[in-house]
Length: 362
Image (tube, rainbow, N blue to C red):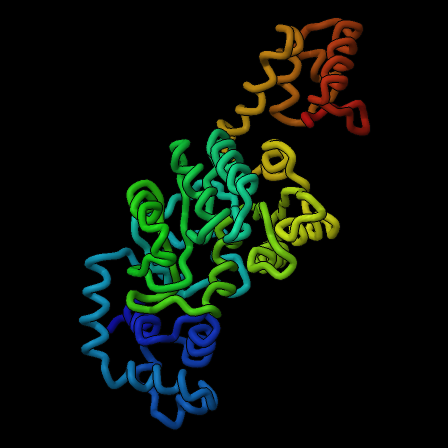
C-alpha cells in the first residue's frame, strides 16, 4: 500500500480519531512504516490500550483485505485525507483536524460557511429561526454546516437547500448510515444538492461519544457558529466551545429566560457571544472574509433608502475606509455638500467616522 492508502487503511480498520493517527505519524514519520513495525514496538508506541493495539495489529495482518475494502469504498464515496492538496484549509488549521474524511454528495466547496446548531427537541420558534436565518445566509452567498440531527440542525439544512444554497452535513457515524432515520428525505436532498462528510468509515454505527468529536469539524469548517436554542448542558455548547478555541465567531439567538431551551444561548450571550437579532449581526463580523461580490448585497439592500448623491458617497466608503480629502477628490462635491451627505449617512447608521476624519461603513 502507498502512504495515502496506509493512512486510510488504519482509519478503515478502526482508528477513528485523529490523535492516535497523529501519534503514529509523529513516531514513525510515515504511515507505511507502521505496517512493517514489530508487535513489541507497536505496544511501546501505542501504549497499553488494548483496542488500539488490536486495531493496528489486525490491520498489519490483513493488509490485502484492507486494500480490497479501500478500493470498494473508493468506488462508492470520495475519500479525502489531510495529505491531499484540496483538503479544506480552514479545517486544516484546527488543533486536531481529521486525518481522513469520507464524503458523499457534491464535492466539498470552498464557500464561506456558518455552523448552525441547537436543540434536537427545538421549539416551533427555534425551527422557524433556523429556517429563516439559513435562507438569509444563502442570500449573502454563505452556506450552512450542521450535524443532520433533529430540530435546529435539520431546519437549518432544509432552509438553506430550499433557498438554493449549499449545505454540509457532518455525521457522527459511518458515511453509509442514515442517522437519525427520520431524516432520510433530508439526507437524499443533501446528497443531491449538498455534501455529507464524516471521519468514520462505512459500517461504523453511531455512538454517543462520536458526536462531541464531530462538533469540532462543524466549527472547523465554519467562519462562525450560530447557536439558536440550547439547554444548559447541550451538545451545541460544545460546538460553541470548539469555535472559540479555533478563533471562530460565536453567535447566539436570545430567548425567553423562562424556557429551558434558552438557558444555554442566554448564557453564551452573557459570556460574550454576539447577539443575533437580524442577519447583519452575523454578516458584519465576518464581512472581511466574504468574496467582494458578496459584500455588495448589503449595499444593494440600503441603496433603495438613499438619494443619488448619498449612494455615490456610500459606495466609495464601502470599498474601504477613506479620508474626507479623498472623498472630496473622488466625488467632486463641495466640502459643505459632502459634510451634509456624511451627516445623513451617519444618522442612517450606515457609516461611522474614524480618527483622522476618515470614514468607514458600519
